[in-house]
Image (tube, rainbow, N blue to C red; front, side, top):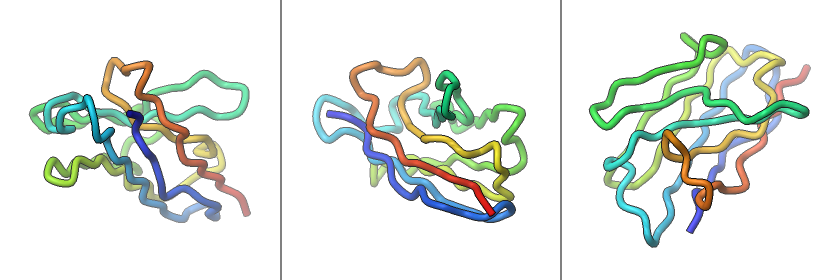
Length: 117
């Protein structure tokens, strides 16, 4: 009943990771029916949105990740991905996906990204 995120790991500064999120299998329509977003929560910080894709496919990015992250959606697979390039120390966080205006009951465990040399 929750989103399932994967793809995190340990990466050096300047490296890349691709995160993937699978939508809940029950009680949830296709990701193509929602504005979808990726969020992250760094230690000691509140969860923040980093990228979103509207129903029509328009993308929005938070300033710290603009030009480095790309959100994409596969309606057939019911997945939402986040390609992260040129990673920085400050990108270290647990990353989550959810609908934009998130559904509280759908938060998953997230996937941890650690950027370290």
